Amino acid sequence: MAEQDVRKDIINRLRTIKGHIQGIEKMVEENKQCDDILVQIAAIKSSIEKVGMIIVEDHAKSCLFKEQVSPEEAEKVIKSIIKFMK
Image (cartoon, rainbow, N blue to C red; front, top):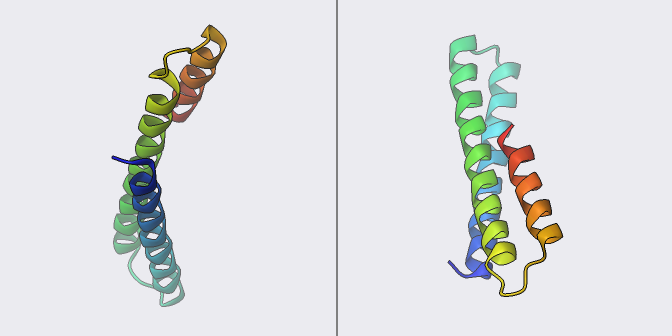
């Protein structure tokens, strides 16, 4: 996927997440059932993880697949990936 397409996909996903968060806020204000709220929170968590994975994948591709990657650059990318995965 081209860099611009990746950025557009991420922005669309983040806007969707923002809408879900606003929906949860409304659910709390309306005193909806906890189970329903937790289902929405789980969906948001999954969406955030997906956005993170897209960013990690794009970052790794752009940094690690260059011809001249220094060990320091590679280590920095790997540390970022590990930090995200925790």
